[in-house]
Image 1 (tube, one colour):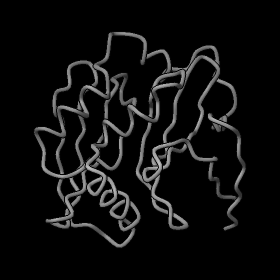
Image 2 (cartoon, one colour; image 1 turned 90 degrees about the horizontal axis):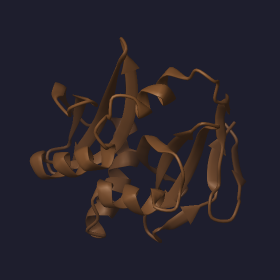
Image 3 (cartoon, rainbow, N blue to C red; image 1 turned 60 degrees about the vertical axis):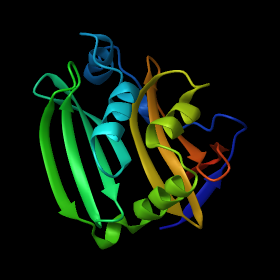
Length: 178
């Protein structure tokens, strides 16, 4: 695996899978039916659940939009997975597991968030505040000594992948792996 860095000024972008097609079911479903704002649900989860959100993702399953969240609880060495219905925020699935070796990068980023006394929802809000598009994915990462939030936005032109430095609270040049 070779690490490549490429930079742009404030909004490093990556078109994930080419341009959006005219009939993109995920993009269409984000605007239809008034799904709950994922940032609002993140804030609710942060007050109701133990642990720090480390990942957010959208899943389009059987014609229904779902939000998936992972929470890491460093004190209990656990990972909680939540699936909520996007239309009303109803909890559909909750699963708790012990952290595994491949969760250590996210754990390092979670610990930095705790040190900075920042919530995941506050970090995501900072990262997306000057960006266009709908949030479809966000995940804490730690690589090359940097803890960052990697997130994807989608608009009518397609997907963009961006990164935001947790320590410096500013956009990062995009990291990609080939």
